[in-house]
Picture (cartoon, helix red, strand yellow):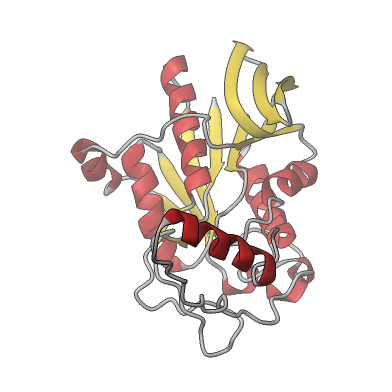
Length: 260
C-alpha cells in the first residue's frame, strides 16, 4: 500500500512567539520549527500500517519553504521512505483551501491508496485542509480518527470521536483520514533511523495548478493584524484567618470579577 502523509512545519508549542514588524505575522527569529504534532500521529499510523502489512511505501508531503527539509528528515528518521516538498514561492502563503488544492495536485501524480493528515495544525487551527483535500480528490474521508482497523485490503474501519461517544465508519479506498490525539503514540527516531534518513530522497516538485486559486493570490482568508494577549494584572494576596479572608474573596468575586 502506498500512503501519503501530509505534514506542515509549525512553531514549537514551547517557543516564545513575537509579532513581526509588519504586525501580521510572527517573527521567525530563534523560533524552533517542528512537524505539526497531529501530523506526527498520521506519520506513526502510516508506519504501523506498512509494518503490519509487511510491504508498502510511506511518503511525507509538505507545502513549505526550503527550511522544511529538516522536518521532513525527522519524519524520514522515524521510518518514512521518502519526502516530497512543494517550495515554489508562488504556491506558498495561501489559506487552507489553497494548500488543499496544491496537495491534491501532487497526490494525483503520486497515486496513493491512502492519505493521512493531522486533524489540524497547531499554528492556525483551521481544521480545513484534510477535508478540503478529500473534496478536491473526490475521495471519501473520515476526520478525527482515534483507531483504524483493516477488515480487508480495500476497506478501512475508522473509529472517530463524537459528542458523548464514538462512531465507527467504514470507508473504501482510496480515502483521506485525519488523525486525532489518541490514535497512537508517535515513536522516537532511532540512531539507525537518523543515519538512514540522510540517504533517503526528498524531491522538490511544482504541481500544475491555477495560480489564481493558490498562494497569497488565491487566499480567501487574510490575516489583517496580530496582537499579543493583554498583560495580566497583578494578583491579590489575602492575609489573616480563613474566617476573615473568605468574605473578602467572595466580595471581590462579586464586585470586581463579577462571576458571582
